[in-house]
Image 1 (tube, rainbow, N blue to C red):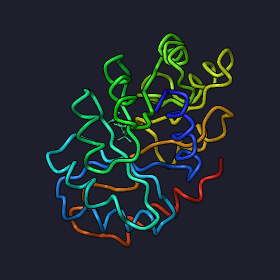
Image 2 (cartoon, rainbow, N blue to C red):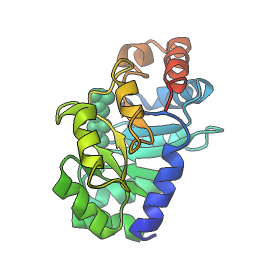
Image 3 (spheres, protein in one colour):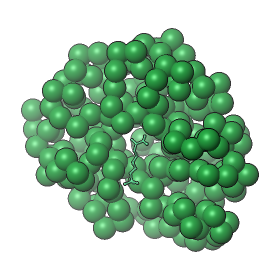
Length: 213
Ligand SMILES: O=C(O)C(=O)C[C@H](O)[C@H](O)COP(=O)(O)O
């Protein structure tokens, strides 16, 4: 799958809901009910970060949740790409991008949402064929004003800002014409997941799903 086709796929995924939950899963047996709670709240696209030993097993457990679209985040190496694909991830997310990572996603047929934080990084990915990017780390590099400024010379590139996005600042991103959705971990607080408080997760998802864009 070439980069243009990858970005077409990630644009479709980004269109599903205003927020993509960014999930850090410690216990794989919590993954399926967590996914069900988020989907029930109206957030079908889910990103499981490969930051914990349980992550790949979690993706496997979530992959066939009805209505869910499960991706792998924190892809850093070609091995991560192959492992994510093998576990059943239907898309990948990376904090930045490298040639090796991009080639691995082309080979594995895994649509990648690659990260960029500066105009040069955005331009390099546009040269490769990507036009749907993650803006990371969104708040730390200037937040919505920075992304608005990048959009002036590069209006055809769409973004999913992630990193420091909250219920309070999400509207400022979602109001921008170059933002399709945002990513955030607040909809699945670690404490709520540890306590299996799925009603709380569904409530947070519902509020996020109702954000205007
Ligand atoms: O792990 C990855 O793939 C990342 O690139 C980072 C995550 O997207 C952000 O760390 C989520 O940020 P918070 O919503 O502020 O917790």
